[in-house]
Length: 179
Figure 1 (cartoon, one colour):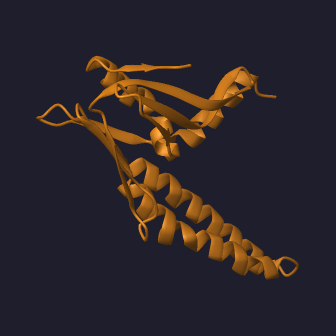
Figure 2: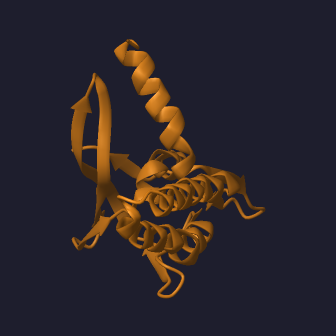
Figure 3: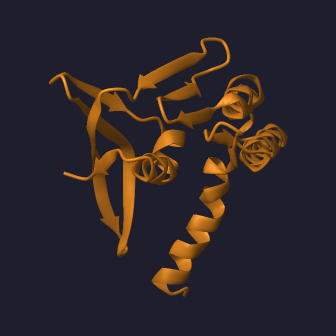
């Protein structure tokens, strides 16, 4: 039997490609966090495994009726998930954050204005599993100097890379903290 920490390391190695990203700085000092090829490749592997399962089910006489459903689910990966994953990005500049996400058929572009920002506070559902912290999508609460507040639910890609965004903002004088 594998020790618990080794098992968690294996799980991390299996799932970390689903959030892989490239980081780059532009000439104006902006930070671009973009979905990487490894992320699309991970979903490609899932597609191949599901297609192989569908073929195995089709060749099995007793489970043949499940093959079309598994194949249909597998086909959703290259049609919907992979194009969406390739376009996800976070562009952080001193004056704002631009987040591109959503399915390719309904893309979403969110701009978060950082002018007049007093503080960003972070919430999230945290779970401890096997001595490791596992988090669902985080929530950022933005407080502005004029008293207005904004609640921002971060997507899974942003949640995975929020610490890099938070450090970028801290380096530029913004207050980013936990409750």
